[in-house]
Image 1 (cartoon, rainbow, N blue to C red):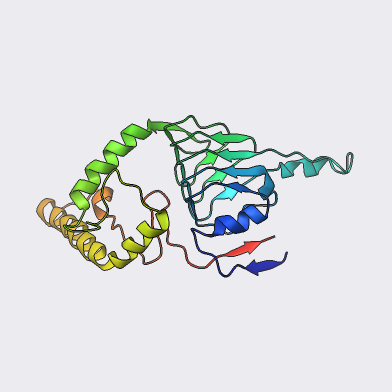
Image 2: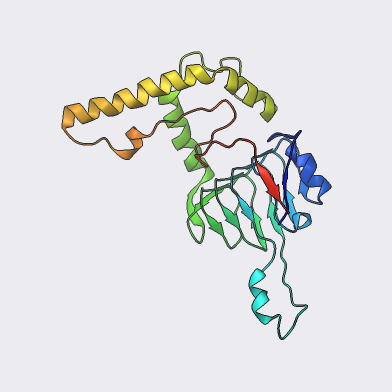
Length: 231
């Protein structure tokens, strides 16, 4: 199998490459992978979507191979559609003939075998709804209010829209501030809990949210660098 290293693209411009392969990709997307599988022309991604690292798009049923001695031409295909404003978490697998409704989140490692309703968070194998998008939003906001450093990204104002690439650049410029703050906040809190109780801290307190100068996300939990695509 030949392998190619894509150059000249980043997570915000790779959509152009995928469009050349036949995929339908909307505007303002952030795509951390460099390969949409063997049938990119069967994939549609809406506006303002994130596709995290190691996400796999499966648009064919390779298991039909077992019948090829009897029927050598047998193949089976299906489309994958992701509607506007969705997040597909790290390592998720999207199977053929699925539709991800708008404003939905697919958790890291989920295996999506059926349609995802709008405004829904799904996780697991097979992926199932675990909460509404509003429930997730309230939980995320509550956590961020406790974790946000003073003055961090102060020039970004709520309810005002910004290009995703511009937001990322601002995050990169403030990466050191965020890293120092989270290390002190989360590790010091963790250590204090351990000393005061004599017990190991709960897992949620022991996790440090490290911000890399390229990208990191709470739902995919992995930093990605230069990637290779395979065809």
